[in-house]
Amino acid sequence: MGVRTAIFPVGGLGTRFLPATKAVPKEMLPVVDKPLIQYAVEEAIDAGIENFVFVTAHGKEAVENHFDRNAGLERALIESGRTDLLAAAQVGNTTPGRISYVRQMDALGLGHAVWCARNLIADEPFAVLLADELLRGDRPPLADLIDLHDRVGGNVISVIEVPEEDTGSYGIVAPGAIDGRTIEVKGIVEKPDPADAPSTYAAVGRYILEPAVMDVLGEGRRGAGGEIQLTDALAEVIGTAPFHAVVHDGPRYDCGTKIGFLEATIALALERDDLGPDIAATLARLLPQQTQGS
Ligand code: UTP
Image: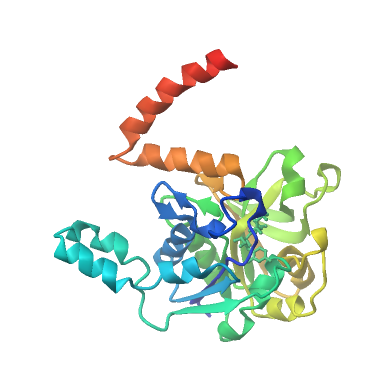
């Protein structure tokens, strides 16, 4: 069966970005001029997703408002003749009824957030996209996962190779057969020490999952950090269905960290015709000062 529904977990506390995330959801922090969550939603739309499920939490109302219409703003833009901005103001105007919101209530971990959406997936394979992983590519990175799922079914995740010393920050795959960018997943373990890591292939926030994963998540077992980990549920379903990883081959920014977020901001600004030359000149001006100061 094709993949029609995507889950966007946005229920986390965003503690690494305090104080910015005290009143503003982390997923609403803008990279250049677009909130992180919009990049993920646009990737899903471009990959053919039709139904959008946000797992939100107290204080995340800005996410709902962002994907709603703002009739007053649209009217003001029309009346003042600034219709060139209308498209930017109409973000996420998908067909009514295609966006759903469910509350997580307690931030018990990513696995718990995904499980909170169990009644909204129609018992079909579904996608999960983490907005703080900003993935870029010639085509939407999620589309590579959907293509593979269309061919072999089962569970499919996106991975990148990370430095050995960083395995403790990721879910790490135990690889089987490798065919180009496709890796058979024989095991997956959350945040292993480098000495225990089965490889350096790390999961990076894009998943196509079979509905059976929800049953495992429903058992509510706690893992690393006392959280209900999605990775642990994935480890349990290995062997029950095909399981593959696709190596993401485009740029990837971990916008859950300050350095990754800043890198994304600079890289995406450099890509743009309206900002690229100015940001390059600004960096050239600032960098010698930095070198002198250090
Ligand atoms: P993170 O692991 O980055 O956690 O979540 P976080 O709470 O957002 O941020 P820090 O670590 O405190 O700085 C990855 C994604 O999973 C969602 C987050 O909103 C983010 O999009 N998430 C995480 C939930 O929806 N619920 C949770 O309980 C945990």
